[in-house]
Image (cartoon, rainbow, N blue to C red; front, top):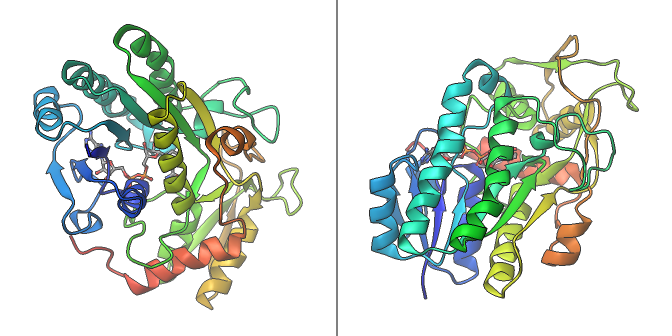
Length: 329
Ligand SMILES: NC(=O)c1ccc[n+]([C@@H]2O[C@H](COP(=O)([O-])OP(=O)(O)OC[C@H]3O[C@@H](n4cnc5c(N)ncnc54)[C@H](O)[C@@H]3O)[C@@H](O)[C@H]2O)c1
């Protein structure tokens, strides 16, 4: 059986996908430059290549060596705010990185590609819940870099026969229920890890805006468990393998949770009180966003197992509290 190549497989979501792939009986090769990932996140016995997706020669060598049947591409930079400060670095990693990888795939005959996209391609959506038909108006180089790849893929398919599935994640959250893997990134900009790191380091957490038109005045987002994202990748892979056509799917729970609800969930899971500071709204933050994932449910046969935010947050707390220093490698 040919392996599945996972770029960014030493990172947060990629490592959960690797775990799910192995559970489903697949062979896996992880490619990661370890800019944000950790060797310790890659299970013993899984082939690991430390390489950068922008390095065409290296990627071609790796694809020739392992001859994977498909590539799952997680490797990217992903901090929205930072992307505004460093657009060139973001386009370079998120766009050029994909170009080089797809070139190496074309030149070695790898025909299936699963791409990590994001709800940031929608910008400030007008219709909630957000379907895949919502207009695409990213408000950052990060969202724009992902949309540019999405728009490139149909042409790449047409010319070179590389089939693809684009998965647009809403807010990834939680950690592996067995506590083996989780997020290890103190610079993470997502609310749940920020709140937990703040608890672990006796810091404070800032809420941006308490005057939104939402039930408790704070911003509302859709938090999807990282293991549910991982299982969606397996479903997407199986669908491509069974001849399913290239397509785009939202991945979310379809439920909105407010910033204040997340903070309560973190306090409940940890049994500790957070030091919360209230600040004004950040430019460009929509009041509320949650997904309509019915297309993924009907066409991938996928649905999220974790729909309770307290349970999702508890898996994060379990990981962080048992790994206060992360992977240590
Ligand atoms: N975390 C979220 O909430 C979220 C939401 C929507 C989309 N996404 C997308 O999911 C993907 C994975 O995100 P994550 O949260 O796991 O982030 P992460 O930083 O934990 O993982 C990314 C991994 O890619 C590696 N990497 C980065 N650039 C690379 C390169 N050029 N070559 C090789 N390796 C490289 C990093 O070392 C890291 O291990 C990203 O594409 C991101 O845009 C994440």
